[in-house]
Amino acid sequence: KLMNTKQLIIEKSLELVIKEGIESTSLQDIIEAAGISKKTFYKYFSSKDECIAEIINQGYDKVRLEISDILVGQDSKDLLYFRKQLEVYLTQTQNYHLYELTKIIRTGTNIELRKNVFKQEQKDIHWMAKRLTDIYGEEASPYSMEVMTYFYGMLQSVLVTYKIKNIPLPVSKIIERNLRYAALILEEMQISDITLFSHNRTVKEEIIHEIYLLKATGTKEDLVLLEALLDELDQTEKRPTIINAFINSLSFDTADLKKNMVVFLKES
Image (cartoon, rainbow, N blue to C red):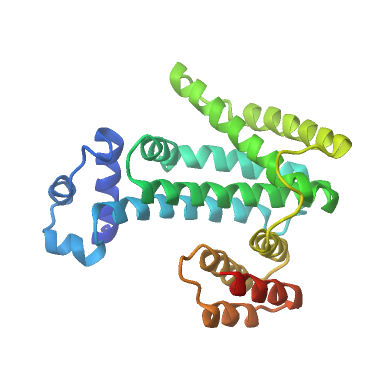
């Protein structure tokens, strides 16, 4: 099957960026590598940066789909399936070159691309926090974001070490050990009730928390709507009509979500 033009541009751009870096890869380089005209490029992307953002977004979307599939028909409270999800997450973020891309972007000068990477990483940490709460119960909820922020940081540190040493990642071992550390951090927080993050969530954080709880029991149609709601929350210009349409289309009771959304939209 022949690759469509947009995907061809994405693939060639990825190859160039990984090899040369973002600043050193010009639009003309991409056009020549893909064997297309400038007019054809602009049919799909308004700029080189938009193309790179699409590469990142596609990669994260693929990873999230794969880790979601693991939990279908399984017990969300079973730690084994969270471990499997995290193993796939760690493996596939490497396979889709997300580690290399995010590293390049963090050390670059493009603020918008850095914001996009941060947004994607925050989505992943929110998902990890939700899964931690699935396993350890709602009593873990006030601490889950902080715990999984540490967990995510530990993963990144381990990746850097193995990349520098240029040795294969022992994926299962890394996930198993880091989850143990996360459990110990959670236990310490619950006992001491000392955290760096505030227990008092903002209205937006409360909405995000509710959305992730709803995702655990939603239909496929609900999951699409809830993901769309998360994207709307991050838009600079809020669109109340669209947000309310998404909420009203959900298949379960959304009274609390609606109430918090009204407050959020007023504050915005």
